[in-house]
Every structure is written in structure tokens, then in C-alpha cells.
Image 1 (cartoon, rainbow, N blue to C red):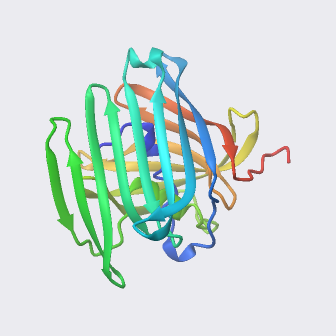
Image 2: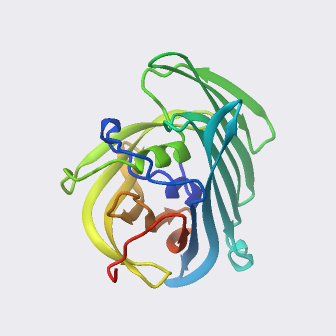
Length: 264
């Protein structure tokens, strides 16, 4: 499951043990925005933006939280690699996933992933997966995974409320991730703490995490990300390895969530 765009990376954050969950780390109305930078020939160029918005709504007659993530490359960046991703996820107030959709144009490729979740009995889940391929084909699959599975957005929102206080550098966690056609194992590796300056001009104490995928019989680092060392675990910066080079996403603005900088 090769993933090479900000939308994948940005919301595969902090898959911490589920029993450690506390309270909701976000509120309806939370809005996060980021500047995107690409590195071409050792020069960093501002190349687009990304934003995430969470609201309280209804899904098939029940109360739910809807999170949307949008990434857009700039006109200048389009000369090298076109990126237009829109992701959508619905969760219950207990942060159980209900529905997921990703529509993506990446380079010359356009595709859509969907996941429909149902829960036939306590502790049992069922997923119906749909993919509109880049060739225009509709492919459907159904699975009843033994372990709970999450898409990238529902995993991020559920995980933000967890407490990693007992972690030591080098600590790893493997977890199942679902999209429109596969369920595969990914890995997170904790690398300690550091300080990051965001594009809002503030410095934040952060946890440093790497996201890895298994490829060619070894774990390959796809991204290193830095999230606030507080109850919200907001991503401040992401360093990404893309097919077209390297990239960064840096927090530009946050609304609906109280972040504590080093100056406060």
C-alpha cells in the first residue's frame, strides 16, 4: 500500500494503545491549516496548502463527527506533480468509524477509495470496500477483519486522545490500515522529543514519530512527523519522502483548539 501524498501522511498519526484513550481531544469547529513545501534541486519552494476541518453532524440517523482533509498543490507545483486530494471520514462520538472516502488526483492518476463500516455484533466489524480505479473500473470487496481496522482519518482522530508518556525512543507499534482495496500492516516508531517552529511564528514542544511501510522485505520510512506534546497531539510539521523528491508540511494556523507554545 504505497502512500506518497500529504493526505495519507498527515492523518496516520499516533496509533497509541486504545485502552489509553481519555476524552475527545478536539471539538466541533476545529480547523487546522498547513503550508506545503517541496524540495527540488536542494531548494525549498512553497508548493501548496492543506487544511482539516471537523464538525458535528448526522450520519444515517445517528450523531457523528465529520472530518474533512483537503490538499492542494500550487500552480507552480503542478508543473512538477499535480496533487488534488479530498478525504472525508464519519465517526461516532465514541470515535468508531462509520464511513471513509478519498478522492485523489496525483500526477496523471485519479482514483476514489471508499470504506463502509458496519458492526453486526459487539466486538465484531465488517467493512465493504469500493475503489474507482485510475482506469475507470469499479471494484468492490467485503471483509470481516478479526481486529478493529481504521482508515487514515478515523485512526488519527481516535488516536489524538491517547497518552504516550511511557514511551522510550525506539518504541514501535504495528497496526492494520484499510482503504478501498486492501487491509495492510503499517508501523509507527517513536524517536523522542524536540522543538519545532511553525509557520504561525510559534515554537512548540513536540513528539517525533516516524511512519514506515514494509517494502522489498524491509521497513521503509515514508515520513517523520512532529506532533504537539500535549493532550491534542496536533501535527506541527511533517517531513515526507515522495516519488518526486522530499516535502514538508508546516502548521500555519489552528482554530478551535488551544495550543500551548513555548512563549505561553
